[in-house]
Amino acid sequence: MNCQETLNLLNMYGYKFHSWGANKFTNVYNYALKFNVNGHHHKGHVYIMVNGSDLYDVFITTNRGTILDTFKDIYFEDLFDVIDKRIEYISDYSE
Image (cartoon, rainbow, N blue to C red):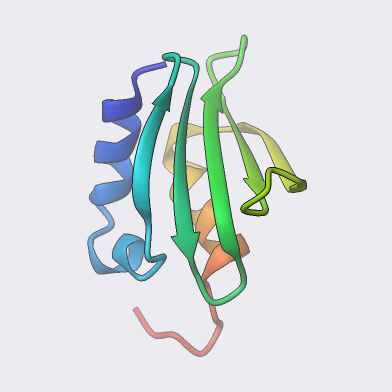
């Protein structure tokens, strides 16, 4: 898992990514990227991992580590939207 590459992907979304209030980025043993968010729908942690199929798995957890949602087998180009819909997206937002 290249955490910096994944973080660069998320940063490409600019203000949309920053609207999550993402901070405290941590490389978890080159296995996962962990960070805190303070979004409209979720305040807690996000874990992003690469699975054996070379696709992403995402875990949304509380600040204490309780898993609230799991998204498996996410393609590179869908990663941002899957996370955004869970933690921040509001249908009234305009592009």
